[in-house]
Length: 139
Image (tube, rainbow, N blue to C red; front, side, top):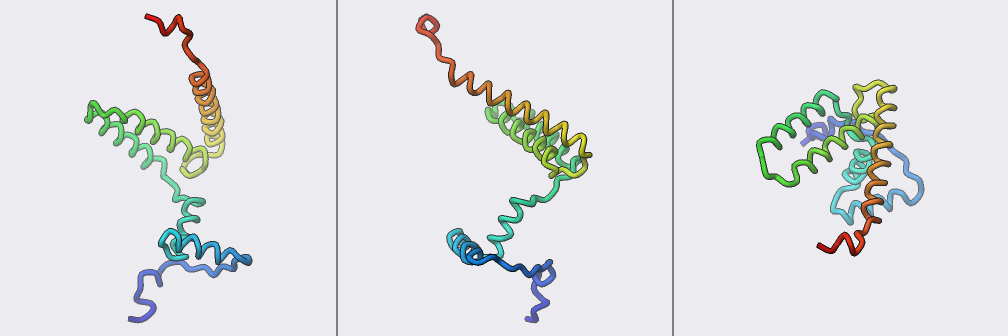
C-alpha cells in the first residue's frame, strides 16, 4: 500500500523541535498510558485548545437535555446533570470556547461567573462551619 493511501497521510502535519528531555517525557507518558507519542501529544493539545462550540448548538444541547430530564421523573441526579451542563456552557462562553459571542459579552459573563463562584464558595464555607447547638439537636 502506498504511503498516500492511509487516512493519516491526508491530515495536517507539523514538524516540531522539542527542548532537551521533552521527547523522553512524552514517550514515557505515552507508554504509561498505552498510547503512541502522537496520540499523547494530540490529547494534551486538545485539552489546551478544545474545539469551539457554536452557541446555537450548545443551547440546543441544553434544551434537549432539559426535555429529556422532564420525561424522566424521579431521576435524582437530573438537576445535578443540568447544572453541570449549564455551568460548562457558561464557562465556555467566558473562556471563548463559544466563539459566537462578542468580547464585551464574554467579559460580562466571566464577571458574573466569577461572582457566582465566589458566592457559592462562601455559602459552602458557611455550611461547613455551621454546627447545630445542643438545643437545636434536641427534639
